[in-house]
Image 1 (tube, one colour):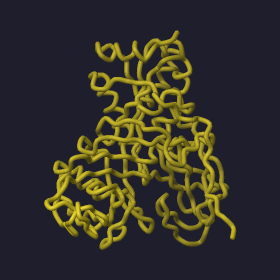
Image 2: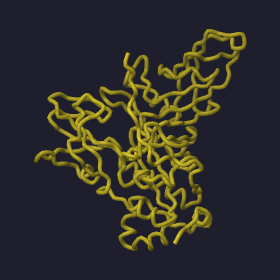
Image 3: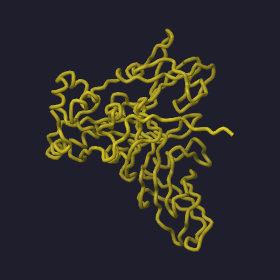
Image 4: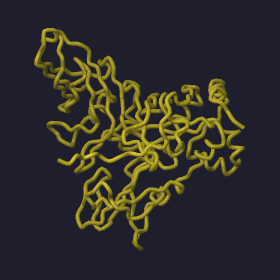
Amino acid sequence: MHKSIGQINERIRDGSARVVTAEEMPRIVDELGEEGALKEVDVVTTGTFGAMCSSGAFLNFGHSEPPIRMERIWLNDVEAYGGLAAVDTYIGATQQSDTLDERYGGAHVIEDLVSGKSVELRASSRGTDCYPRRSISTELLLENLNQAIMCNPRNAYQRYNAATNTTDRLLHTYMGTLLPHTGNITFSGAGVLNPISNDPKLRLIGGGVPIFLCGAQGMVVGEGTQHSPAGGFGTLMVTGNLKEMSPDYLRAATMTGYGVTLYVGLGVPLPVLDLDVVRATAVRDEDISVDLLDYGVPSRARPPVRSVTYAELRSGAVEINGEVVRTSSLSSFHRARQVAGELKAWIEKGRMQLALPTRPIDAAKKVHPMHESTK
């Protein structure tokens, strides 16, 4: 048996499509078998909600009177990129405030805009004949912007290595605070609900595919930066309209001693076309393994302490050398569930049609380290 994307979309339009979340799918396969699940289920929704540092937004302010060609730009004292023509900018999530350091950054600016708060724009210029103004300072709301387009270079990691610390000192990392002497384990990722974990061969996820992005309908652009699915670490570049997003699924945060980040809610609907899709979406937390790395080693190639599954990590404790070590998640599985559930409701109500990739993503790619020249 095989279903086409056209058949599934027709069922979505007439309200007869069976939509389930990726968390529900393994039980359905157990009960009905693979053939039965293929016949019964049309769409599987996925979801993840976690810190996605490689995020940001393109903003267009419109022209002032007299006009200015913005060369240096600050939003609430957070510097934004000024190399995008006259009144465009890109605000990166991890850029820190000039005055508040890691307590406030680009992620907070983005959340403030989405939450309806005003943001101070300051900009300077050397001035030109066509853009004579040299400085500007004003307050802006999201509704005042011509465009506010979220464009995230690297989101939705397929999986994430877990972290611990074997040294005798406290460490502050992007994996949170790690206690000395293997005092704790931190991890991230939605496991069974994660989009690429349910489509590891990237047959269904690619350029042009509609997604849930921070409460709005967004789209996959293509592979994300550091995309490395050959090792189980695929990523996505995604985009969406910031003006349609919700602070429920977009939150700024600060990792103590590390810096600012943005929590992003992202979900991808997967059409159940054939048995290969059924098998991929029947994945469970116990099927997804990651390395537990020692972040006490200051190297790109941190040594693995052991391999662990998401089921073990989510249980609350993992055994290391005979000792039971507590685990904690930096991402929210509860919120990931909400993403998958809301996406499911959208499709059941006919608010979103599905599409196959117009531009496939390489499922065999492997990331390479930086090339450092020797002089």
